[in-house]
Image 1 (cartoon, rainbow, N blue to C red):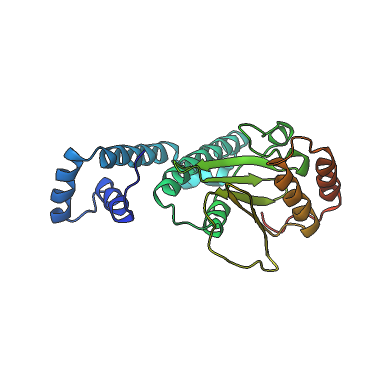
Image 2 (image 1 turned 45 degrees about the horizontal axis):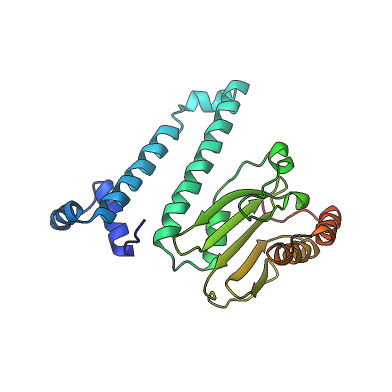
Length: 241
């Protein structure tokens, strides 16, 4: 997929919503006939809009007050669907807005809600080289990548833990950790890594950071897995939910 500019991205969104000024619409329609990248992006934007309309709950006030068990199950299904669509939206947005910093991406993930069940935690999330953090009670809930092999992984836990790992070919802008934001960053010959967590137990974060560093360099990670498990067992609950 070819990238488009931020201005074109905003114009296509306005066009899809019927909010683009008439003069700009004429110009955009002419470009759409000759620029496949714009055509492809418009289709994706329209698909996202259609998906959001389908899953939007249509509940009247009486149904909201009843709160029957059957309705509660329906609300849960809708929430899961919304989470899936949001992940798809992030895949599109991150592809076109490659200027987002690791902190931007972490905060964007925090704005989303992910359903993490006990079954999710039990199932291994390690695939295609992705670190498996199930020992730390964290499940992979979003995996975003672009054509330049930049990647953002977001993990969530049942107790509110949220953690983001970004992997890029270039160094990211510098920023500092705070009492609420835990930060670790390192580089190897080919990539730069930034690990962020909000409200997580510091010892648990350190153990996870060490494990992830070794994950990309050493297939035998038994000792760090044990350390991560021990840190998780003694960690205080995450402060975000």
